[in-house]
Length: 284
Ligand code: NDP
Image 1 (tube, protein in one colour):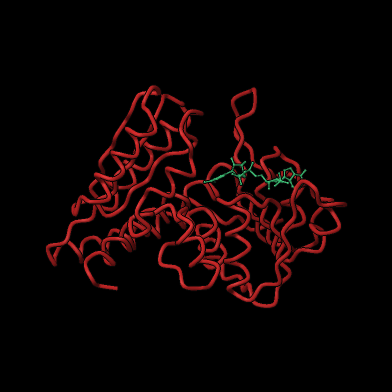
Image 2 (image 1 turned 30 degrees about the horizontal axis):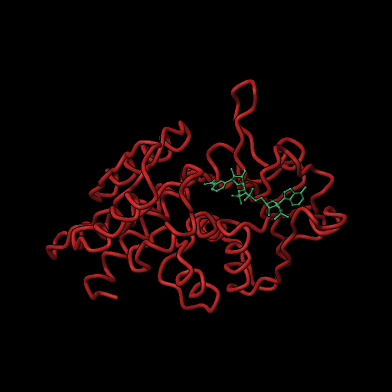
């Protein structure tokens, strides 16, 4: 039976460390502030934005929320971002994705100052990550790495397989595992015989947006299995991309859904916001 790596426990630890850093900065007269923009009324996005606000409260970070109507134009959004880029009180800026169809996400991501890009989506920060010179961490993949570290798992020399190649999860996940000397394979929807790769993995990270796709017979004995996926099923229950019940019988470690990677993303966002404040105040 696999040991569970609890995202609740690890995220509480990471937020606790961020809170200590905020306190130290406050003692030096430096406050820490995150601006979050939400355009439209997508209920899932509203929940995420609210969770970010709560995490800021826990960490002592001031949070500014800009809840804009669906009808907001791209230009109006860009004007707000420019204002926040120039606001010395604001350390981090996050625009909740997805955006309404009439707004170009890439244009918006590119408009956020790389120095305030706490989501680590700006091409400058993505490039820095890939050359090993990053300031901000990609939130979800860095959250996965924290869980792996917390469980005391070594990445060096391990066969690491990432299922999914999105810009937000799969690609940066591969970069972080490689940076710790894992031997990384990235699979995607055009990969032939996926199970040949997954069965070979010492560390398997699944971010494929396919409910319960990875089953026990696709996993090597004693593998470490990290499930990034999150889905709400018709009956209201939550599940991941991994079939927890069959995989936990074979894996050595597994992350649950809910209570796994989910809470980590916001915890790393808090860390990045603290990093932004330190950077903007010449402390790093
Ligand atoms: P995307 O939909 O952007 O990417 C999915 C990836 O999986 C693509 O690269 C796709 O390949 C690949 N894929 C799809 N089907 C298969 C298949 N049958 N075999 C192999 N690869 C496949 O998703 P995201 O990366 O944004 O998110 C992944 C999951 O993680 C989602 O369930 C999402 O909800 C969750 N998530 C959770 C977060 C958290 O905080 N816990 C944060 C972000 C995401 P291709 O490129 O060829 O299309």
